[in-house]
Image 1 (cartoon, rainbow, N blue to C red):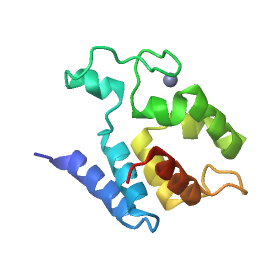
Image 2: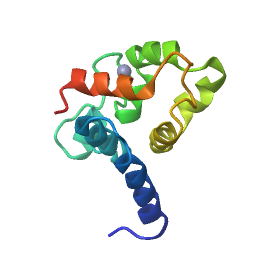
Image 3: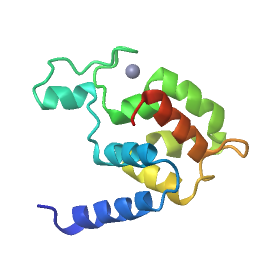
Length: 131
Ligand SMILES: [Zn+2]
């Protein structure tokens, strides 16, 4: 059962995601990321579905959602093209749940002027086949 700060935080996240006007698959994807529920290798090991949490792409020892979406080198190469250099540290190293909510509330917070968070997410979710 959720209580106190956790319940408030999850409620705040859900309210922001509910306001998202993109595709349903992106909204679902963001909610799963926000809850840490994607079945990355670290989650599979935690649930005894696998024995190795290593990232198959780069060999990093702990493949969680944050690693795949922000820290693995293919993700870093994408983000480096669309994140403002002045926002880089905050964007890459902030808590991933706060990062999602911040981007939902202020789409241009981290992104360069010619990038757009929402179409990028829709394309990414479509590419991943989340729907
Ligand atoms: Zn990796």
